[in-house]
Picture 1 (cartoon, rainbow, N blue to C red):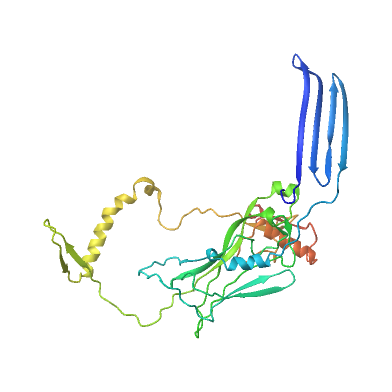
Picture 2: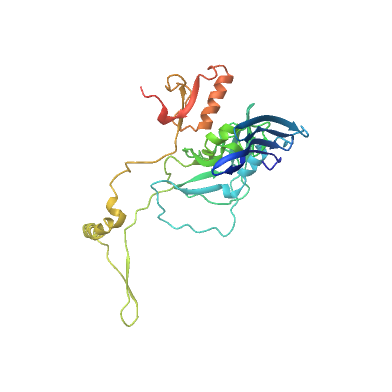
Length: 362
């Protein structure tokens, strides 16, 4: 750890003198050393001469006992600043949607409506604090057929924080964010929120023992933001149908271009043309890796490993302690168990968090 500086190291070494492949004398040292406030050395030394062995154990502490610590931090204000970072906001098209028009870029900023705002709800350990962050200028536009996404990498959301970096947390321990769209004089569209996940280093936000640092995953996927999109597209105004036309341009050998407007093609002719073109491209689909493609949805899909809370004796899933409809990480499961034990809903050590593959199947 560099801030504040400390270290913990384990060493094991041996020095021996041998004759014709046999040890005549040797010295072996096993040492665990940590420091510098205070210094602590613990280990074992062994001296061997022919068939005579002597071992000595030692456990010594010296130096100042004033361990350097960092001041506790409140992540609330840095998290609010993440909401104002333009790079954390983005937009994109919904699935199964495509842009069929070209949008002209804005050459001058457009003043937003005074009633437009984004509300971030910050859930603290002792209650819920709400901060309204109102846009002051149009930084980017969202396509009418698209969605709005907020993604930050400062802290994992919907997770109780023990620390941020090397500093312990105070005042606010759990954060979450939600978006609300307010229309100017009209009801806003119905939104479909979807969590956005990122990989976070577990040891940067949870207090772990030495054994947990080695046995548990270093990175886990946690909620990092939210993506919202309208449940269905909304059309403003009257739909105006138009005929499909195209322009044919012929450039002869003399380079003089002539332009003529072809008559509207009949759908029967176009359908035959499309069918013939599809047959010509059919051979391309079966070349290279295309020969291994199958129709429909993929039969095998890889996903992140989920965890469940089970009874320690039977490995059966404990009802009422799972995240409904959501994948649960190991850290989230341990937080649920810790909260249930603190509330005396279950006995300590009666349940464990295991991968879904280890759950007993009835």
